[in-house]
Amino acid sequence: MGPPPSATHHRELDLHATAGPAACSAGIAWVRRALADWSPAGPAGHGDDAVLVAAELLSNAVEHAGGVRSLTLAHHHGVLQIAVTDPSPDRPRLREHRPDSVGGHGLFLVDRLTRHWGSRPNGRGKTVWADLDLPS
Image (cartoon, rainbow, N blue to C red; front, top):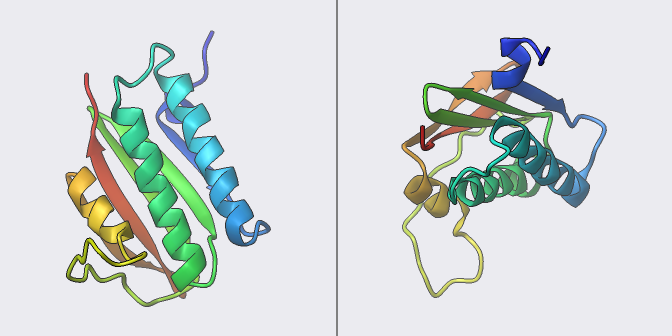
């Protein structure tokens, strides 16, 4: 018998004790494992987008928001939601994209690869989330 449906379609990784780039690495590896568990045959290319979106949200939290508290994945009805909670109340802002700049491409990529994204207050910090369409 497999895991209960709640464990199959919703997972959360606590990253309070993991600092800096190590939180990004741990989160990316965790997303890859979760996607493989949910779709052993592979997510038909969409897994790469999901890993990239997760990496961007994680690195933005580390670089601009004081670290990562948690990473959550929820997969329901063909939509994967990736959510990163950090300690900063400052909401992310999509700025004008400058392709020739070094850095500053994270939210632009998130915006291009996802159906929707946004943020919501979470305690003293916030959660930045992004929804990706996945094949059925």
